[in-house]
Amino acid sequence: MLQVSYIRENREKVLERLTLKNFKQPELVDEIIELDEDRRKTQTQLDEVSAKSNSIAKQIGDLMRQGQKEQAESLKAETPVLKEQAKTLADKLASLEESLQSKIVLLPNLPHSSVPKGSTPEENETIFEHGEKPLLSANALPHWELAAKYDIIDFELGNKIAGAGFPVYKGKGAKLQRALINFFLDNAEAEGYREMQPPIVVNEASGFGTGQLPDKEGQMYHVGIDNLYLIPTAEVPITNLYRDVIVKEEELPIKNCAYTPCFRREAGSYGAHVRGLNRLHQFDKVEIVQIAQPEKSYEVLERMSAYVQSLLQKLELPYRVLRLCGGDMSFASALTYDMETWCAAQGRWLEVSSVSNFETFQSNRLKLRFKGKEGKTQLAHTLNGSALALPRIVATLLENNQTEAGIKIPAALVPYTKFEWIN
RNA sequence: GGAGAGAUGUCAGAGUGGUCGAAUGAGCCAGCUUGGAAAGCUGGUAUACUCGCAAGGGUAUCCAGGGUUCGAAUCCCUGUCUCUCCGCCA
Image (cartoon, rainbow, N blue to C red):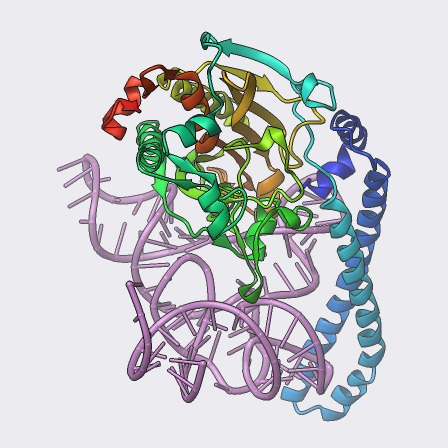
């Protein structure tokens, strides 16, 4: 959520930046500014009336104590008018605040100055590419066929007990999952992240804090009876740990990581390109989350990007890094890097990580602030990234490392799997 | 699921209608003291909105939302959460 004061003071810039994000309702900006002006005027009026009432109440108190009952009574006569005024103003204020809030949450975050123009994934900017695309033999298989061949992931069985998009990992498939989770967590710890285990259901306030609610409600599984949501990413609980918190500046940056299952309804997306592990309703992910000082957050973002890349390098996966264009970025992000691995049998790039700086967009919703040496409190910047999401890593590993003898586990992972081959 | 108790500042904890943004203590910060430290002493120590160049002022906030009242941390209603006991349970 953008700050009203910022919109008020930077109208032109806000409009210009929203254009880059292909925002369709620029008229909202002026509506917000107008509502805000009205809101502040009403606030001032209400404050004045309240000040008057307070002073009268105080005088009545004084008079009563001095036993001057009659004068007190005559002062009381003045209050009904004030009360009426206060009520009217308070109602007006509440309704102004409500419409202001309802409009301001519709504005996406403003993109950083380095964000390229564009509205489709094709217009994302490839800023780095690493590793050789493997040359597979003509009879190479996509991962879902390899999964069946080696009996390590069973999509049918998951179908039976839950539905499409809930695979069952079996034997070495399950062990590979566990190995990857541990590999990612150990690396994150070495990078300075504190491991956390949060709840994987969250309440409404948490969903709002990180921006999933109210608009992306349909993407989360909702447990109606208790009004809880299954998390779509660990970002939600981990970032919300700091909701309504004022941290000390010297504690920054705060670095947390967590492994959690993630749940996404992804309603209505079925088809060939979502086969196998490409898109699931439940998947595992290790997430890294940082809270940083505003002037350092872009440095932090680069560092997070480099860290994610180091994981891909250790796993010996060919990848590229994209800087997302304005139209392809998420609602809340100011700058996003996507990491994609080359999935050789499918012959396509698969997104395995997304690293973003949200600047104050989330912290404004969360009321996550820090207090500097001078005692001034200000909103902190939040960042997060997948490090990494498992299914597409598994898909890439299976497809790229398939040989006549089976699937070769990358050396860095063998201490975790304790086997070198799936065969 | 049943019964009861409770929710006050960074923490502990007072406060049952006015002088309460809130006693007291601890913590923290600054200063004094000291060779340095401890102890001691002195002062400071919430957040949001708003007015103001500033100094400073106004308003709101004692879990949340309503209500009673000239006036609510205090009384009433509703909700949420926490704790204790019982039941159930990995």
